[in-house]
Image (tube, rainbow, N blue to C red; front, side, top):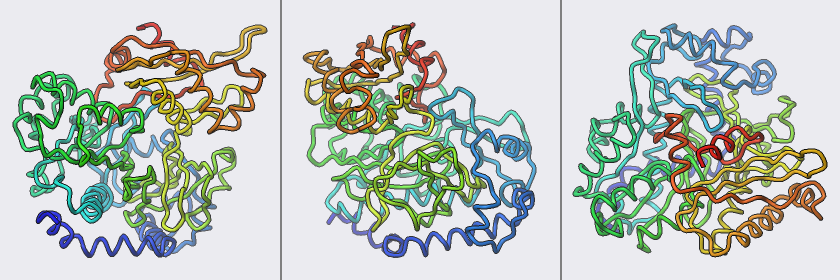
Length: 501
């Protein structure tokens, strides 16, 4: 075992025992988090508004507090941004993670409290290191520095000392000094607001540094890594960073990008570890790299509820961790030490294990196609795109899909705009396998496709190189946690992209 990994395992031994505890006693640990959160909530105006105290039972909490989205909380969050105290959480929040999500242009401002920063976001980062070092003692990932491709921050226009920016920028600005020494690039470069300038600065500053791991969103990191290869005149990242061993990723599915990373990092020692870290909190991490499943982290000051997607119209159907089942698509609802109470984050998950509780992210509550009753979700789309790419030797850079609505006597369908790094050997075969795989993983889609009863075969449009990048650039959405919407139930995004196309 490498010395650094031995030291990490020793330092984190107590923490690893805590993780083992919530693996064995998930509901007991979740109920402890609930009791702690209720104590904080009892000191807020939000709880007073709904007649809640600090010693309520879970049933009363669910009965009195509504399930909310950002629009429902926006008024309260604006008050917090103006400096009002004890609105959603005791005291004042001075940091706000700015996010547009994947389906809207309007910014959201998620409060980041001292408790959520330390007990949730930073704890998630520490646990990622601890779990990886424990299960991969031979790895060189911690012998050098971690390259982080973060976002930007700026003074909040509402004043009162509040600051807002991408979550990654907030984490960098508040990172403990010892941890900051283990990462690159410099804070000055990491917080450059212009994505393209930042990429160039990272290439200049980090190409000669000892980078052994990197972290961030797969799509934007791929842009950076390809530019780094051009900058250094190399074909492999291992020529630049010979000990590169780990990519900690999240934000979008890694499946469409895996083959491209394996091409530019041709090493059997390279590991890819997924985390579920959103502006609203750090929720899960991949402890077994041979599967896509992530361990739900149960002691970060987050109380979880789950609402079956087919019951979104009935909030009373929300259940706690004690009652979840495998194989059900749930909308995730969180109450957090950031002052979000019964907040529907917008992500959908499926439990793959209950001992311990492991999840897969399946999509978004507002990012799907259900124009004809097909209930197509992102997990279905990612699987189908990956299968089609493998079968035709293609490498996919980005994609999005939207309905083709019925017009007169014509039947409906789906239009897929796909940008390739390497085009498929046969575009028609790519579309056929895409269609076939969707039918295999989604019975509703299969029923609508049966004998072309409702849906015609998918229409594949091969995007010109750089179309998605230019579209995101036009929307001022380069870098950070901005994501290309994979699926939409209308044609707004795809029509904008086709105009550029």
